[in-house]
Amino acid sequence: MLPRAAVQALSHYSSASDHDATALNEAEIRSLAARFGSPLLLIDCEQVRRQYRALSAALPGVDLHYALKPLPHAAVVACLRDEGAFFDLATTGEVELVKTAGIAPERCIHTHPIKRDSDIRDALRYGVTTFVADNPDEVRKFARYRKRAELLIRVSFRSPDAVVDLSKKFGCEAGAVLGLLELARSLGVRVKGLSFHVGSQACDPSKYVEAINACNNLIGEALLAGLPALEVLDIGGGFPVAYNEQVPAIDEFCAPIRAALAKLPKHVRLIAEPGRFLSAPAGVAVSTVMGKAKRDGRWWYYLDDGVYGSYSGQMFDHAKYPVSALKDGTVTFPSVLTGPTCDSIDVIDDNIELPELEIGDLIVGRMMGAYTWASATDFNFFRRAKVVVVNERPAAEGRIVKLQRRR
Ligand SMILES: *Cc1c(COP(=O)(O)O)cnc(C)c1O
Image (cartoon, rainbow, N blue to C red; front, side, top):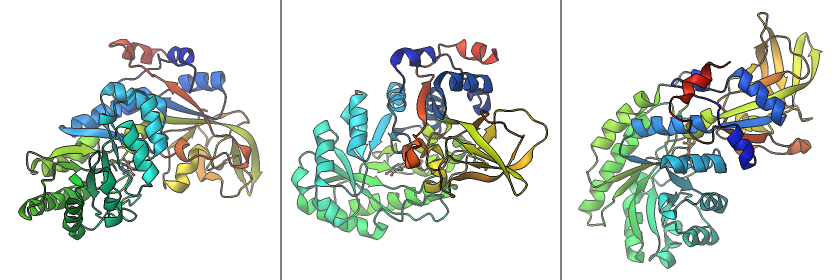
């Protein structure tokens, strides 16, 4: 991150109401690249705030716990802290990050379904008391912490349609929940609710609806069985963003989810764990053409960032980002964009329409805040992009539009 003074100097980068109008513009990106070099990952906190407010409005009554995994950056944590968000942690590194940001542990839950004893102790020492388990061995790990920790049971609802199906690796079958509740009761471990994750970049809200309805039934069955009442439902993350394909606006996407939540008993407290939705639009990757060659009649452009760097999400997250050149040109050609490493899989796009580029031209990847920098490597000694935070503080009211016009 930048020294504080530098960050404040960048705080005038502006925003307005609609996504494209608020995104960092060409002139702003050029001046940041001139000042900080390349490759860069720009994190625009104004976009984080916009996404947080949009999801809060779309899910009234649901506490939003930011899952740090897609963009574990202090500026994002601080920005969401100031918005009043809650946090979802999975590792001791994430515990350290929220602790450093001065976040009260009561605002955090720990949701890794499989933990070492040291992971549990690190989180407990910080003051987190809510954990997740999805199998008998994991529930048993909490017997010794029963006075200090409470559990959510993670249930699996497969979504083979989600881009990343997170119910394959984690979660118990719905039919196993009552058994786990009984086991927990016999050990004196308190289970306060249920959680699920329908899969990241979920394309269909009906997966949430099915999962919420199934959890509603489980809450009823637990009561009938005389087990302690389940008081929390955690609907996980997965909320989608528009990369290239069209994704419904978040309010529309959440409408059926709101309807399903409204049918739950009134005593059930609702929480969610959005990651991608809050962080993806905040990230802008800026890279530079470091060489070019014509091969088989096509221009190949070699950038200083690639799939081992910020574009790692193309491998790990199966994402395809909107990428463009900061260059006007009415004539475009099918071209190839590659990363800098000596590996042949390090190709960002092998068929992209671009004007003819020169060495030194800038390439911009949008929607690159989630699962990009977080999974980047320094392979081949190409260091990962430098992070520059802009709009760290909310702009004063009225300032936004004025600055946006100054092009
Ligand atoms: C990764 C993860 C999230 C965030 O998921 P998104 O799809 O990025 O919203 C939330 N909860 C858990 C347990 C996760 O592992």
